[in-house]
Image 1 (tube, rainbow, N blue to C red):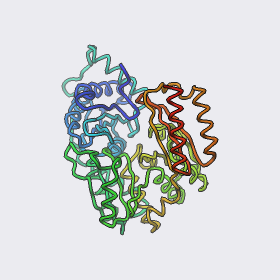
Image 2 (image 1 turned 90 degrees about the vertical axis):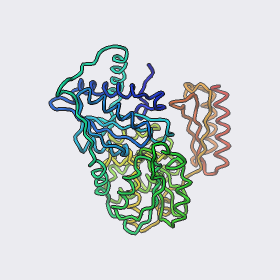
Image 3 (image 1 turned 30 degrees about the vertical axis):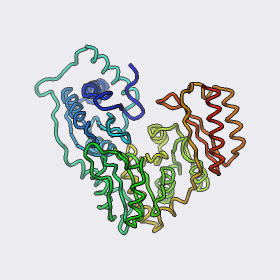
Length: 452
């Protein structure tokens, strides 16, 4: 069996790859594995279960709840809430397990299952591996040890989850947002109620788009992967800026008053300076991935801040932050982790903190984001090549060395094999867009020649 768990849980087309049977089986397996690990020892276990608004989330939630309860786990069903809300509530309620049903920014037919450990942290890889093994053993015939009578789990709708999470978001802000007019694009997703409520409670004037989920329209031409509607709304309403989330609201991108995109690197730069000023940027260090823009690196160097780079994926950013005690990290895509207040990327929290910085300084978002200049970045995907030889091909190494000589200190080259597809990603940054495109195209040809 191929590994079910990817870098962010189990995902696939709902009712094709991700079936009710798989959701139920994985949930039972998770309960048994955590029991074996001693997580439930000495008390009756509890799990928090939430979902995004996808239609398939309704039957998958039912399957997960049934699986957990059948394994003797009491379930607090929180309904439609963002992924970071489920993580927060898992910790705040002292639950032994959290389960989120979402496929994040993916199209509506997909869905996914993500498990959180006690405290709201990502489940360790070795536990995910063990869950897969146990699931497969019982899928092929080994009977479960099932509780009966009073031993079965009880299911409760925890309606207080919404207010508890929103109150947490507002409480951790350094200042109020009075006087700001903000457009929020909720991607017809899990933050459709949470984000507008939090911004309003914090004092902002709120205009919402993409906030009418019907189970089918999540991420459909809106949200953090489609900023066109947000740009238009910000300009139409004369707003100070706009915030866009994805379907499960663990991402945040923004547009300024003129409709110009503010990406995750720029958001990180703004928050880094704010946290340094507040004395909360531990080690004066920010964690980002190798895909972060060279302009971000140069800005951090200019500001005297340290930058730690990780592999692509917010899980690697989080691992580095936890290992070394850093407070801020994130990705260009808008996953931003403020570890003092969240155990995972939290798009609503990120948007609120960005807004708080605008309100506190009286400066526009465009002015704050100008702390870094985004250098032109060209990304080319080269398909149908032997990606396993990216780092061993002498021919390719020579081509990269030549490109790096040409770019000098004002550019950067990154060749990265895809984690999920038979292709190699070629990324080139340079001070000039035409130079970046020319170098990237030459390197893409070199990849085809060396690895084709």
